[in-house]
Amino acid sequence: MKSKKIIIGSRGSKLALIYAEKAKAEIIKFSKEFDVEIKKITTKGDIIQDVRLSDTGGKGLFCNLIEQELINKKIDIAVHALKDLPSNETQGLTTDCFLKRNDPREILISKNNLDFHKIKTGSVIGTSSYRREFQLKRIRKDLKYRLIRGNVDTRIEKLKKNLFDAIILSYAGIKSLNLEDNITQIFSTSEIIPSAGQGVIALQCRKDDEAIINLLKKINHKETHCCVQAERNVLKVLEGDCETPVGVLAKIESDKAILEAELFSLDGKKRFYVKSSNKLNLAKNLGIEVGKLLKKRSKNSYKR
Image 1 (cartoon, rainbow, N blue to C red):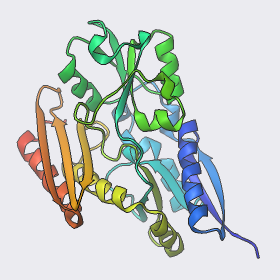
Image 2 (cartoon, rainbow, N blue to C red):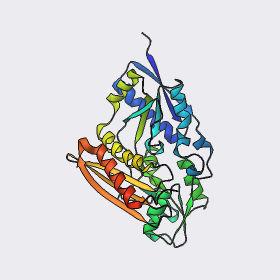
Image 3 (cartoon, rainbow, N blue to C red):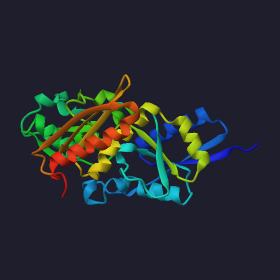
Image 4 (cartoon, rainbow, N blue to C red):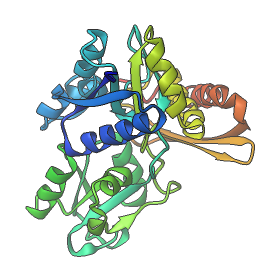
């Protein structure tokens, strides 16, 4: 009997394909009746590498084309790095399956292997987001922060070419690519609260595809699911996008969800911090509550 085919859509970068292979392995583990194929899709975010995402269409640049393939039934499942996925769901699609979270922390790679506190005043630090820039400025205002884009290998190459003195990246990406030998320093989540959904692989499908939805329910990691629901609800309340300077991280301790978030004004001068907890079954509500608190305290100073 011929196996049913499932086509997974993924960006074509080395890291994205590693994530897609992880998703494929999970599908095969839970359902051997499917023949699983990975389809590479080049997104606008992969092509436009020299400006901030917010200046070229935001987070959607990494997922719009993949989502369109899903809507057009060219693929059955889309694999995304959750932090690159807008908080509002695209009509006709659902993102309700998450693989077990990788390490959400941020890392530093620097010339001469100097940790962040020892880098020379006036050195240039490469980062791709306002959030990281504002968080790092709280620790070191005497450094210069510049935009860096491109995949992980490209960014490390720019550092080697002396275009930067240090770069900030997510630990999850470095670890997945087996590039941990390059790491100078790992920041704790109390030093730098990561982006909502950082370190999480999300699987998206069509809302009316019951067979795939039922399959993805088997794969879904419940603890990760609980945490990212809370984190992304903060973004939804804030109407956040890739330009919003906000860090959000949820953790589960015993029977409680603990959510920590910080939001900066658009100029980075004001910081609004909230830490709260609730019962696990109320994690969704916790995200909404924290989002509302941040919105109220900031008086929309984080918006253009």
